[in-house]
Amino acid sequence: MDGLLLDTEDIYTLCNNVILRECNKPNLPWNIKAQLQGRPGPEAGEIFHAWAQLPIPRAEYARKNTELQRKHFPTARPLPGVPDLLKTLTQSGVRLALATSSHTANFKLKTSHLEDLFTAFPDEQRVLGDDPRIPPGKGKPAPDIYLLALDTINQGLRKQGKKEIKSEECLVFEDSVPGVEAGRRAGMRVVWCPHPDLLKEYKGREKEVLAGLTNGGGDEQVQEVMQEAAVGGEGKGRGWPGRRDDGWAELLRSLENFPYDKYSIDVA
Image: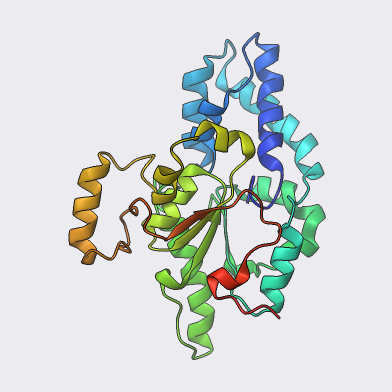
């Protein structure tokens, strides 16, 4: 959601930079921010504080950050192409679920003024970062949040006596690098639509990102061998990232003019 549907990644940066400047620290660089994106709050916080080395207690930082977020999150706006994309998918009968690392309180701050936009996601098909069904330590880049989001859709289909959707039939939209890996490890296709500055940070490594090989997986060659053994060489095994140029992930610089036909989506 953050940085994909809404401009809230820039708001996160703004809030952090205010505190960093107050502490005579440099602004948050993208090589650090890239590691924070998409991750659950506690894990992202550990990475941030290990880098920032702030001269104030973490509790004071948290208080200041919360105050700034309460001020700025209600100004969040949809990113280009998002309203049309959600409207078109909804009108076309595509089943949608929201999977975000934002916890409930922040989600409300970011979206309460955008209720019309988020009607695309039924309440029972929203998985937030503090959802108790996600085990501790299983946030992105682990696949759990996307597998749970799919299950929320399938629960409704089961009640209707309809055929369930498989992981390989899903399309994940992501802006973060850990999120791309989570989608790939869930066995789903992924569209990566990153912030322009994040894309600059990963220039020359785009194929690694799209394969889900940049965060927690270890040696790429070992991963590929193990994954191939697990899935018979098809490159679609749940729990494993993908492989370079396997055709299961694509980079888009914007969600404007989304290529529905490419993903066999019949638009209404």
